[in-house]
Length: 421
Image (tube, rainbow, N blue to C red):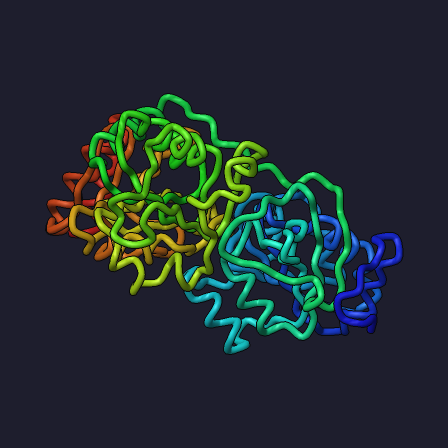
């Protein structure tokens, strides 16, 4: 094995010097994918016999189903480009709360032998920033036998997590553009849902945002608000817009005054420019961003998450579509529970009422219960808001029918009578 801290040219990178047969490998997710290291690993995969990767949200199309000929693929999510792996049946999901991943890694319930981490160029003190993802990467590096860094000038230097190149086993220089994750586009349904949600959010509230078009639409609808805070697992371009517009100030959140906190940056060059050396932004590990102890200190926490389907009693499926694993348990329950007990908080799950002509408000879920009905709060579609807090089963059914698509309400009502007869 080369001496620690040695730079290796990509053309000379021989991963067999670092990876052993049977090793489990972790790399950053979404925009934090170290593309050059991933590409080398895929190209050289037959040199290690079988190895395993633990995946998060996919950013690039580097990993494909045919690579299962030498790679076992597990992960907490089948999101982003990894939906292809889920649909092909080669991704074996680990159904865990996002907040538990660092603990599962530390206990080796999720094994980590080798880490590929993408970092910024070093600052004057010789410290690189993890830049686009802290989340569970620090926990993975602490547990790994070997850490290989990919230094990319496109990665911003973001406060919260640093790494010195003389402390890693090897590093490479890459000039590949970082994966862009553009803000979602809003249709009529998303715009209507965003208006419903924005009307419920008070000035001074602190936001947590899930992934997808709906959270982005909500952020666009908040430009008239004031003194909002941000404590979220992920952020992107719409957060940068609100921060630079003076809407997000973090002055009333209760902790981390004046600072937006996130674990993962999922945006474009617009987000990266805003994030670079920004003292009003900090990346943090999952055991801080999703910690019940931390979340309990936040004022007016508004958790906004999406779902695949919700039944008439408030049970939420965020994992499976038509028998295929395409989502994740994720961090929704951590934030929904925290928002439910936060003074002035709002636990919100939002979804369009239909998809491809089928109702997403259902009498019976077609997949697992990702969030139980006891943790459901406000369910929002383009047809309105169903506030399920404190409602009986019959009250919930009536509230949910009122936000279902009108053309599906009679069928849903009849199915509900049979289901609960």
